[in-house]
Length: 341
Image (cartoon, rainbow, N blue to C red):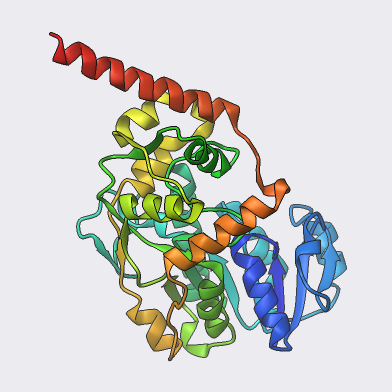
C-alpha cells in the first residue's frame, strides 16, 4: 500500500507511521520537516508547507496514492484545499475529526457513530463538524472516496494524559504531585472518561486504510476501557510513587477563571466535563479482531517513566502553577468564610 500523510509526526500519526513502515508499506509525508527525527528510516519526505497549495501541487507532480490522510486539517477551507489537491490522486482520503464533535451536553453517555454532532462550547469541534459535512457532501455528489475517523483522548509515551493543565502540557501537574502539592480535578472526579494509547489507535486506523467498506463512513477509534477522573489521577500518582492530593473545582469555575488563551471552556465544558462511554462495534465490524490491549495503568506508567527520563519532556508551566495555587487558595478561603458565617 502506498500512503501519503499530511503531518505524520504527531501523537496519533507517529504511531501509525511507525506501524506502516514496520509492515513494509510505502509511506510518504508532506510536512515542514521539524519532527521527522521521531520516525524510523524508510519514510519518503515531501518537504513543504501544506498551506502553500501551488508548491505542494508542483511537488506531487503526477503521483497517486492508495490512501491520503490529513492529520492537521482543522477547518473546511483546509479540506477544500485537500479536495483540489487529491481528487483523482487517491483511492481513499481519511480525515481525522474528533469525538469532541459529538453532541454536548450528551443525551446518552453511550456514544456511537450515530450520536448527533453538536458542540456549542468549542469552535474547534464545530470546525470539525463542518469539515465532516463538507466531505460527506463531496462523497455523495462527487464520489470523493472519504473516510472520517473520530479519535477521543489519545496519548503516547511522550506525555502523560490528564484532564486539566495549561498550554505547556501536563508536566506541571506531575511536578505538583511530586512536590506534594494539591492538584485540581474538574468536577468531583466521578465523571467517566476513556484514554486510548496511540499504539492501539494505530491498529484500528491501519485496519481502515485501503478498506473498501470504510468508504463514506465515519468511524470512532477508542479503547473500551472506561475510568473516572479520580481513577485516572490516582493511576498517575501511583506511577509517580506519591499520594494524590486532590482539590475538586467545578468545571464552570475552572473555565471561567482561566485566561482566554487557554480555551478551557471548550476543552472542559465541550469535552472532558462530560461522561463518555464509547461503543466501538462499528470499528470492530470493519476491522475484525481489533481490540485495545494497553490498559491505562500500563500506558500511564510507560508515559511517566519516559517523561521523567527525558528532560526535554519536562516543560514547566509557571503561569499554570500560579493559577492552581490561586484557585485552591480562593476555594479554601471561600469554604472558611461560609463555615464561619
